[in-house]
Length: 337
Image (cartoon, rainbow, N blue to C red):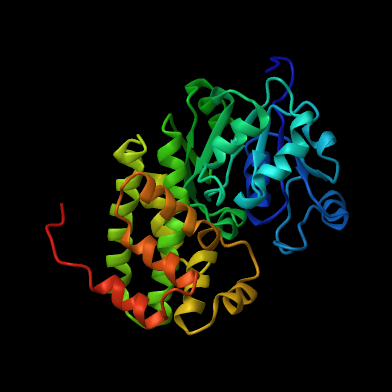
């Protein structure tokens, strides 16, 4: 990275979390060029400093600009921050790779598992771009975009095998309201971010069925246990799952009405079909897309994940709502640890 200029970030794309990430970076003093698929979004950001699709009421810093040209967005970018649906990452990244600079560090904000391969986002990024692991980082934590856009306090974990790269991005996105911590446990951070979406679906279902706060607390706690089992089986550190990208993200996603996955689950719990819940939620719900892939990972590593198994079966219409609720409660009693 040049010592003679301000580090720059390219944020792909201009969705809800991408817009929030752009604001964080700009507020931390890192100029941002956002890549937007639609020209009207790019024009609105450049002209009115607002994203009319997601946060029409919140002004973005003047150091956030936008373009529909991925090459222009990546020109001289020190950071490529990716916030796109996990299932479209591979195809999109293949088109963008020729524009990625030789020293650009790629930061994934994605919280899903690729369905066809079972790969985490960092693995897809490394495979498609050929970039070494020391140039691929992950940011994950309890980060509800609407609250961050309002400047409410939040924190996250930045994980990268290269601790220096993690520290540099920590500086690039540290603001009075956003506190980033660093880690080298990329696997743990990514699994915490992916599995919590599935657990949030379960908590939402319980809420939609009126099952109460005790049931929600049970699902959150046992959901953390099964997430940790999978993470440890895949060589992650168990302490990571007790941190911001594990427990922190799990609590926020399972309890907030701003959470897409919890909201989607609530629709299911109220008796809507998957298609009806999809129409009602209107945004990408990674837990729905990733549940089957996470279950495949669990089976490949011989890990028991009963909540994930039940939610996957419900999403694929292999069990009814009542059968799913009964399955979650009828686990055989055993020692907690």
